[in-house]
Image 1 (tube, helix red, strand yellow):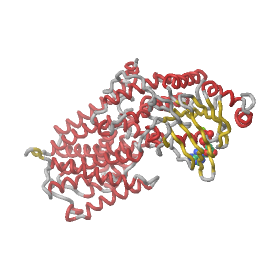
Image 2 (spheres, helix red, strand yellow):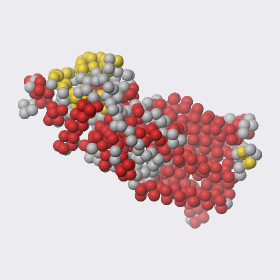
Image 3 (cartoon, rainbow, N blue to C red):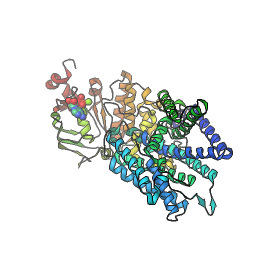
Image 4 (cartoon, rainbow, N blue to C red):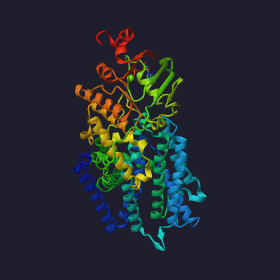
Length: 600
Ligand code: ADP
Ligand code: MG
């Protein structure tokens, strides 16, 4: 296998160097401030670190299409939680920090379960509501928190009698930032991270590749809440004094601004965002107070204007300005491909898919009316018919994207599972008529999404690097799938840069990654040139003959379908018009009348 060459092509050295350079610069800056600067600046560095921790979780949340307008509440819960545990109940600080983190994870879980069912604008509003509610509690619970005047006497971190001073606490905070950066870089590139990036725009697709979307969203939210708690607990030991205004709505908005300012396509954005936010804020202060001698209110305005300018100039944040993504292309630096056999089809015996009297109505429109089809196993079956006939709807019913209004579908003698994420686990993978790729990920990583069902790694095992063997195996499979569809050379290219025809072939490779027994292709040849169509026909034949795969293909190119299909179904106005071998269909007067015309 020439995967080594391919993998080498995937990681453009320039981009990596750029990222290393940036990281090095930040490390030197932070280290020198921590070692030499005055307590005031060390304080700033500590706060920037605390913010970076929260924003890393928040940024990943945002990368997956969720938003939290109340994240400072978790910071506050972590801070008050650990402070009270140590000050009131005598818990050692070292133990209080994980307790506060866990508390926020639990609260985050409950809030996620309550709010994630909300749709549209209601979800951000709900996050706003808990942000406000929790921060009000810090003021209202005077007995516990000291109310608006704050909580004093918070204990610093001490380990075996050695008390952390300001500088060492700030250093510890940055050690945590560095560890989280490593963990989050792995998460972004790992199994869940890949699909998480698609949750934002391609929810239907990720479900069809085995992702439990609500559970995944919940986990990501819980992780971000836990990080808020961790940051808060560290903040408490650093400050040793807590004021509720630190965790107000304004603070939540600032965290959001840091996330957007830095960019959410990678964890570095959180660090850049937190640093630049503070730099802009400070320079606005200096400019207004010292240079221009203007009153303090103007400072907020200048700060706002500076932010707007930066966001207009770099809408994807400083990461896009620095041209940094998640660090390299799809290939993980530490995931070296190992030789694994090309994945065989999941099923040895030919599959059978039978739809019985399936009807699908959209309101008053009947897209499918009493359609019964039996798809022969280990064969290529064509599904043809004019636009609007119901072909894609049948695909959607067969993959549980939509439940059938009535009728039943059985797969290998058993009823079809009720959710699309279970359907793919049974061995049915598909492509989409309207291409569903994550446009800002490269080809390889889009293909890897298809392997989600064949992996196990979760967020944490990715973060701790426990997914290396699995990633290497998936990577090899993805490269093999790409080679099979003839796109190996393009593995490292961003999908948005490919012509539509090639994007469709990326979808085919992604479907192969799920190791399907039954492959459903919805107009795969649209946009392909003649030699590419020939290649597709050869691929379908080899999937049938060598892998024993069952293929169901919707296609308008009659030469292609008639040339490679063993059997055909014809849909018209939601009804099954005819079925038979290509020769039978070609000479069927009803089909000629409705679809083929006389020149076919
Ligand atoms: P084909 O793939 O054969 O071109 P479709 O299955 O996409 O046809 O569409 C069949 C009919 O169902 C069309 O009239 C289409 O407008 C309608 N339809 C498909 N999906 C939906 C939907 N999600 N909501 C409402 N109508 C739909
Ligand atoms: Mg269609």
